[in-house]
Image (cartoon, rainbow, N blue to C red):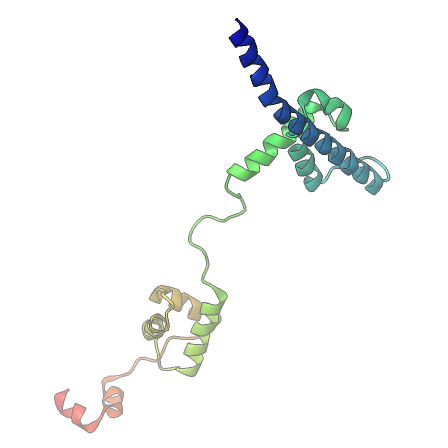
Length: 177
């Protein structure tokens, strides 16, 4: 029997600093919540409107204040605090909805480089332009190069007829063709 009393006393002595620290954190959180509530009220003239940052702040502070004290500390109901906390968690654990489905668009720098290559080397087609971009370290499909050139109004490289092609080759190449 005396051993259980000693064990209970030791357990209470061990939990006492934790309770004191917790109560001190809760008091600090209460003070912060009241100060922020005053700041919100000073910012408003007519009806109080809580901005998203205010809601997040109050939701975070509500986790530090004991639930029994919420009615005295916060200017909103405990149900509203819980709803704000749920919204905060839902926003953290869901993917943003503003992303469009499908492939991401080509980077503007790659588009500019493609157009520059096409203007400076007008004899290159979309496949050779794609090859040059690949050599520079920009992996891009030939069809994407074609779409970029087409959207900019740049026509494909002119097709070479057989005679025209032969005239551009070296004299030795005529014999092999």
